[in-house]
Length: 157
Ligand code: SF4
Image (tube, rainbow, N blue to C red; front, side, top):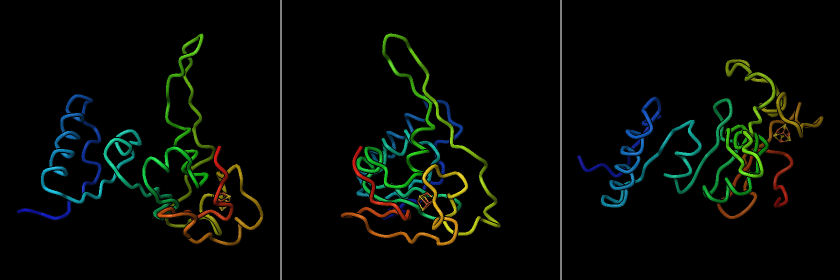
């Protein structure tokens, strides 16, 4: 069919790791050989980092951050992106092998009746009075970089 674009909705979820790797390599090959554009939808941050040039982070159905994948992972510009990256379990090799895991606080509100203001304010460690009343617009904070947080841009860590 020679498509110009593929929309891939969780294409590797529920696959075991070896099959997942084969499918990801097939996507990379198709993109390289056919010059495809792919819109890749996933909850797996590792797969997104491996496959995608640009990433849009969504919370309760809205984009809260968008940018080049390397830049977003290196210096997130929205507290939800930061919390997502912190919630990925990983091993830190030091004197001891320690598992680091910081889950996001609070419960996910219903998308049918999201909280007023910033939809993330009930779970955001940086929330302040304005966040409860005014929904932050998704705005440009750098070249090709957008964030929907009143406090963005954040200084580099
Ligand atoms: S607008 Fe306020 S509540 Fe929303 S992410 Fe930014 S600091 Fe947190």
